[in-house]
Amino acid sequence: MNNWVYGKEIYSMNEVINTLKNKKEIHIGTDSQPKGINSLFVTAICFVDKNKIDYFWNKKLIQINGKDYNNRLPLEIYTSIDIAIYISERINEPDISIHFDINSNPKFRSNVYYGMAKGMAEGCGFDYFVKPKSWAASSVADWYTK
Image (cartoon, rainbow, N blue to C red; front, side):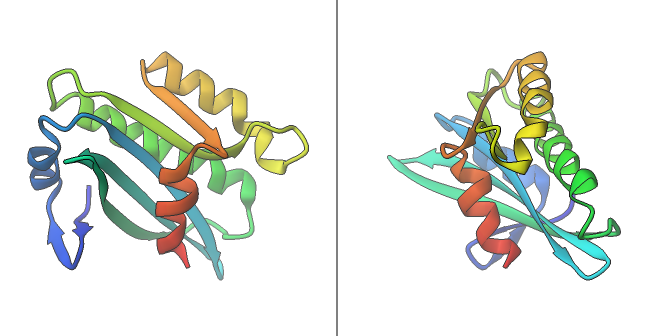
């Protein structure tokens, strides 16, 4: 787990975990964008703090063909779930939800991964959200992929 950014400061994952202890809600989302033959992945760990939402984010370039949507989207799902599991193993009874950049409407291409994302999240015991309610992925993480 690489370094995480909060404001203009950089934190280790251990520091992120310490910050997340005793937070009411934790929301995790990942988004990606093609960057040539690679893909830029951004994961956001959002949390409610004093009635406002704040977040850490992590950016990494992965050697996956950016145009290969069928590799990128499952990796977004796996990344968010992996982070959620990592956090849940280190915080006592966290309230974690995972936000997937997937549309529940079958008219959209991402819908083909809806069942997979739902099954993985529920199988791991996490609540989940998809578009249009998946703001941690679709807004926060998305912002840093640009």
